[in-house]
Length: 165
Image (tube, rainbow, N blue to C red; front, side):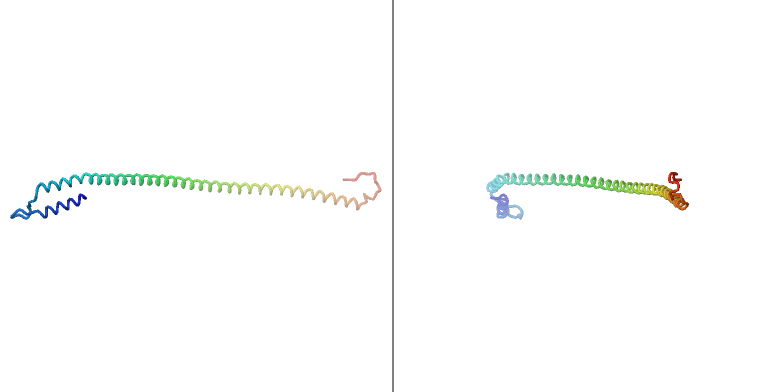
């Protein structure tokens, strides 16, 4: 029988006991029968108490395991958070550094482009001057040749005489 049922039985026994005359709170019952019932209850209680204690220990063990698991999960979450923040900071720093390097490269490329443009412009101007002088020299040579032709130098009179230019 369940210990709670035993307790209910004892309560019924006490309620059914005869009252002491002239008293509402005192009662009479068979002492031996009451002791027997209490001894039976006591013999049943230890096994039930042991079961209850085992259940409580199991509950405490499960709660402690849950706490440890929760602490581990929180700790891993914090570590992951710190790692992600660190990675994010590294990423942001790398992006800033990359943007700075790109800006410097663009500035340097623009400077070099301007230097190359100046160099090419100077080289073309020098080439233009050279060509202008060469054209002028060619034009003068042609003018001289036309002038000599007009005065008759090329008519064969003096074929052994060298040309004046």
